[in-house]
Amino acid sequence: MEKELNILWTNADPVTAEKMVFMYAGNSLKRNWWEKVTVIIWGATAQLIADNDAIRTSIISLIDQGVYFSACKACADQLGVTGQLEEMGIEVKYWGEPLTEILQSGKKIISV
Image (cartoon, rainbow, N blue to C red; front, side, top):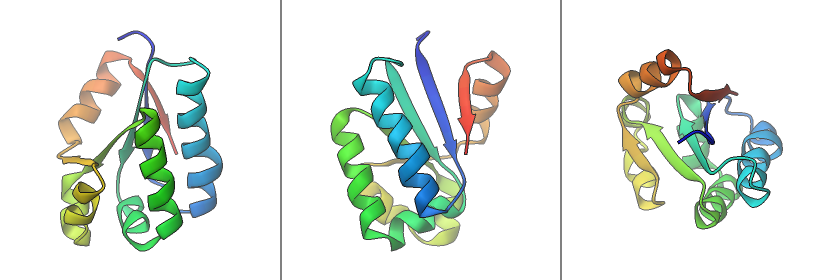
């Protein structure tokens, strides 16, 4: 898909989540800037989701709007939050190889 954006979200700051990751992901679909938006949850962001009600509410709203969320399984397992993420409808999988494929193929990715 040519108009596909991946957002690699590693920054566990809630303000950055709300004012960059979530705002851009949601508006990207609403305004047809991108046809598909995937937010890749990596590292401490998995813990932020588990610990923060407002962040969870925002993610559920974005999922309802069509933003796709997927989390690094190794990170989620190590942080003990895999079940919580899956219960929200977030895919949890090993992301090392898929991330490498995105980078090597030249697909669009933003790292935050």
